[in-house]
Figure: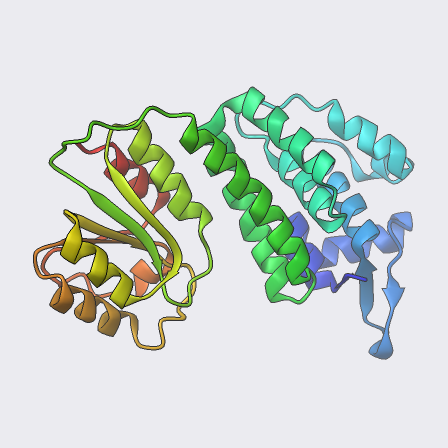
Length: 292
């Protein structure tokens, strides 16, 4: 069973812990279980209910009204909120709910509706990315088992692969040819797949090596095929060395290549290496993909 502290609920719902305590005291709202030390403890059903309440609260509903409704009524009310450009919380919360329950049918249905509502690229950047950040927080706090995280990531990966395969192939001869990879030890692949989608959409040829790629594989390919840019994305620092040491190794092994770095690791690097470009935000990543 998944278990959450009040701080977990605060981080996931965007409602301060003292506000949650006040709601509990004043409205008897979502009375949590207690564990040793009398600390509040919430389960998956509590989280789902509070995510919906938080969504409605952030959209102007008074907590005094929400406290009088049962879970079914809360869910029905949440579905009636118009989803304008900035109101994506309900989509994210539904994806979390589907992931906690390992409900593939619900996940696919919700994601399909997101794409219909806002288009594929915004579905990835405005919903999938924030959703994965929340799932990552759940994983870090021990409240999502690996199966649930892999479940969600695999379904989003499948959406990206379908979108990539649906695009026309770029021209065979192009000034650039980008090899995309995640370094050895890095298992996060979705941002890299999204970049491949954007590059292919914009007519930029790519070679995709995926995650957990060793230096020797890069060397072998570059010896036999033309590559102008090595693009890697890293969320975690599992390189078995300092990030700057890894970059130095890349520039030593591939002095004639442009090295492009994105992901959280880019903020830990010195921006002083020749032929190295750091993309420190999603906007910079998207801009790079559109360059000819």
